[in-house]
Image 1 (cartoon, one colour):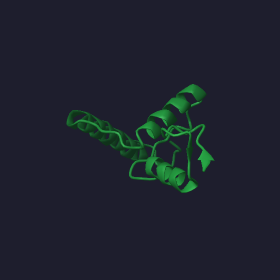
Image 2 (cartoon, helix red, strand yellow):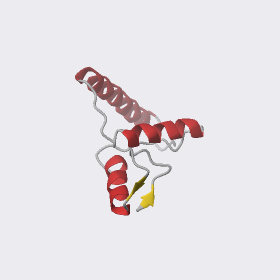
Image 3 (cartoon, one colour):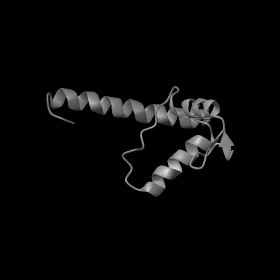
Image 4 (tube, helix red, strand yellow):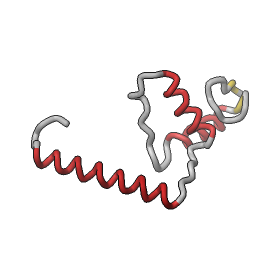
Length: 91
């Protein structure tokens, strides 16, 4: 049994196998989260707490999912446009 001091899994101690399972469930499933570029340690810690507390399972209603899809589609379109317009230029 190992201490889970910096983990937000709702326990003070857990077996290594359980810790690994929880971390894989949170960080190694369908959606990846990029937050290491955030320079403020407070904001990084908030992201970790949010993800770990919810065990990587965050529910969105239909409206929010559609909003996210629209933003991703727009970003993909912009990326393709820039790739055509500025071929070979680092973006």
